[in-house]
Image 1 (cartoon, helix red, strand yellow):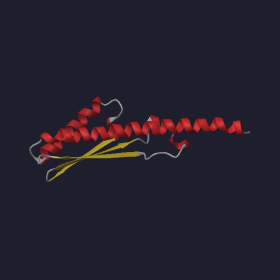
Image 2 (tube, helix red, strand yellow; image 1 turned 90 degrees about the horizontal axis):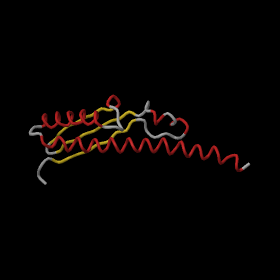
Image 3 (cartoon, one colour; image 1 turned 120 degrees about the vertical axis):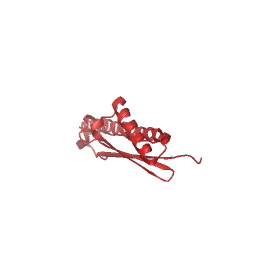
Image 4 (cartoon, helix red, strand yellow; image 1 turned 90 degrees about the vertical axis):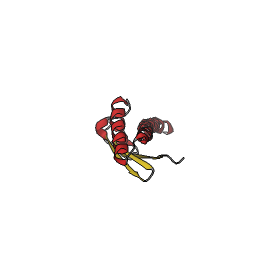
Length: 122
């Protein structure tokens, strides 16, 4: 009787590892992209130029990023004073790695990560 529960339990653990491992992989990739995008915007001279540089870098990096798909991501870049804020939202709801998410308590289907960089004045 006890051995009959081990098989399904191991399968649930394996599914949990796949779902949460994939989610953490994507969340780490989104955070790295947010950080890189914020750093890329430092070179701008005006707030508008920094925002445009951030958005341009983001779109270029999404084309080169193996882990993320461009149509699932959205960027919001803003500046205030000497800070550049980049927020990236990534929708994982229809991602193939999340196909098994209904079998375990699933992580959030929207990954949102931020990066803030100070311009000058270090």
